[in-house]
Image (cartoon, rainbow, N blue to C red; front, side, top):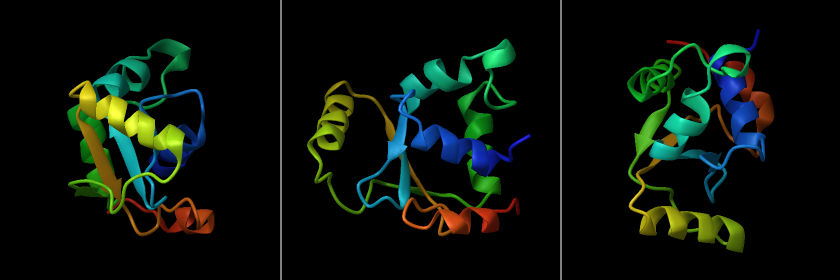
Length: 118
């Protein structure tokens, strides 16, 4: 079975989920909190991705693996689809969470193996 960071990587890389994506800098994970609760954590049975089903437990896992909550990504999206997604989320008053970990970076997938639980 995959570790928490490996599952998270697969989610962020997948086009199946609208609630989680790479931020503009590709160094942060952006999460639309309400949609994520419904789309990812709300899954049960064989479709369940994580052992937890509530946001507080998910955020605790992020912290245990060394992710840091950022107020927002370093820069705004250069690509139109990402920019529109961010704008739509912001206009819908969704809470977008940004989490950063030096070993979780789209540009450097080999660092994922260093992403260990504290």
